[in-house]
Length: 406
Figure 1: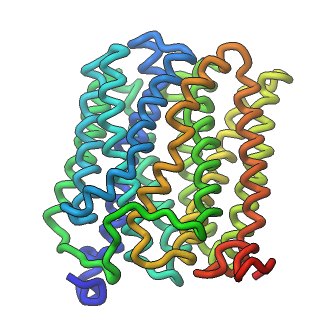
Figure 2: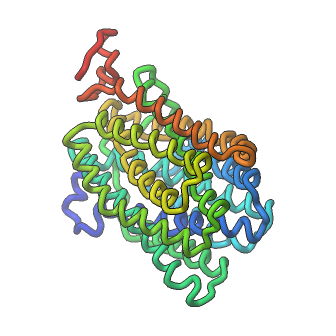
């Protein structure tokens, strides 16, 4: 079915509602996995900073190999590749607690990560193809909010039931993974096959004019890994957070994101990607410096928890990088470049968690100092984005080598 014809369907069968459903389904598994992970690996397998670093390095290998999506879309429609990946994520999450050893955790993490990263790659491509440039900031803001809502649901259920019913890890992982599997199956049955207006290239696309997007994507991936791997781990290792306490912190995060993300989408539409990304990267520089201060100046748990929430709010602005690429890209480049960008995003992610795990056991503050330096580099690069990016004006150095501001 063509996208134009899909407008005649009821809202519940349109492409945008499929994007909403997938946005809600993914975090049911991923958020539950994240909320329980640090406690589970410490209690079940005795992980330390080195162990958690290697686990996350394993988790990022499929992200580095996301370029394989280009080969798969030759044979599988993007819509169904997204749903198949979502199914794999849910199924792997469901069985995590059945393998409570170093080897078992690495194996289930690898499988679930294939589902997560391939889903995220194709999902980003579908968003940029199915949503118009004019509506993209606003709709992507809503998609972020809905994803936060899925995470919030998972966390609220954890807080309400974990201690009340003395739940086992296996029970929670099974329920969360099963819910994602069920939604993926429903979406495969209930929605028609949607055609995209522009056929996507089925070969790797690397273009010199996208260089700024590639550079920002690389640094963002390296910086985000430090937060994903070590920020929550710090709350457990340094401050002794239990499962329900970590989950409460996540709930606060996602309530804030549900409220803020649609507003951020409107702000990106009004002020542009350059301003939005400058706010994100400038804020993250200060937040990571403050994380380091927790270790050097002995700041307490309230400061750490507050920084964790603020950190998530700044990361919610990351969709502005997607809309920047949508504005400068050739329509047929979106799918292959989504795959290439995920690979670029995960170059550092493959080795950084493991290496920084060794630094963590000697100087945790230095780990966050490195993240602050990366955020500062991103901030400097973002000022190279024109006020009104478009093909031929991808950076302020475009337009035949002449310096342009907008």
